Length: 329
Image (cartoon, rainbow, N blue to C red; front, side, top):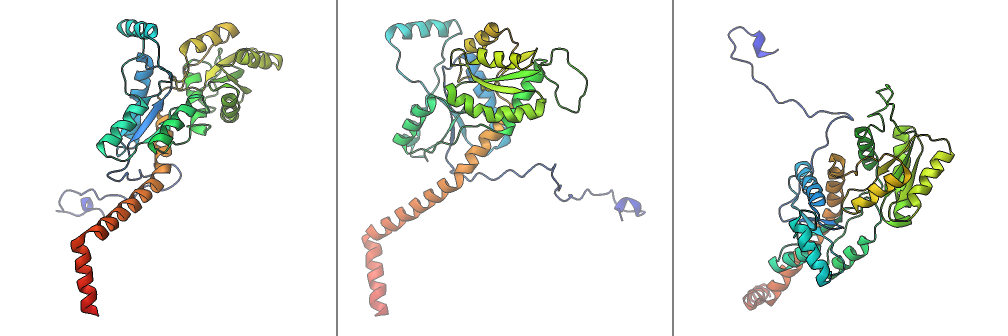
């Protein structure tokens, strides 16, 4: 019986309820132990104001999703530019168009080594295969760092692309809303980066997107000449009258001009890149947590081995152990 039903009883006191159960409850956030390695988002492409803004917003989302993770962004730079390119980049920075002075992955790894903290976990900020992965794995091998898998293919990326299409008026927000959209696409080209390998991997996410939209979806590579146009021609040949482009890219890994050119050359409207979207932050947190247990176990074993080695090398400890052995004898 509630205390409110008892005459003269004090004001009712709220008692904590049990944790919600069932398939719709929010899962508990796993604890990130103190001293866990930092997470470095390895960002391909130039650090333009637009790409930096996307990465900063995504970092904020990851911190909100998993507050215990120390998240940083490091940029992959590739080959060093010559003097003329340096001067052009300086002018572009002054105009607000060029790369910004941000830390690189190599600099963050060096800083961690100098500070004596655990080697950061490197997460490629990519939806699929990409040429930048070779450089990232090379840096990781030199520093002894762990590199997580790329973020896709994954159903959560299909959800993000679906939302971007609906924001552009190219798809219904969900199947439950049965009203028609005059501009809705009847076929989608899932555009991505990473060449033919990237397009092949994106095809898996394309299948998931097709199930959500109930329209045909084909994947194409933005960085392969003729790939997007060929995919659009295929859709039109199979009956699509209003094909649209849906970028399966986070943003920094592809030149924005490629997205614009693809839309102009095919005459198809395009949704925006996935960018900083909540499900991407979930994927980032999950990727980090999946590699954390073995790293913590290895660090604990190394610390224990170091302590045993230090104890064995301590003359005073050796003398004490010898005295105890003599007394027992």
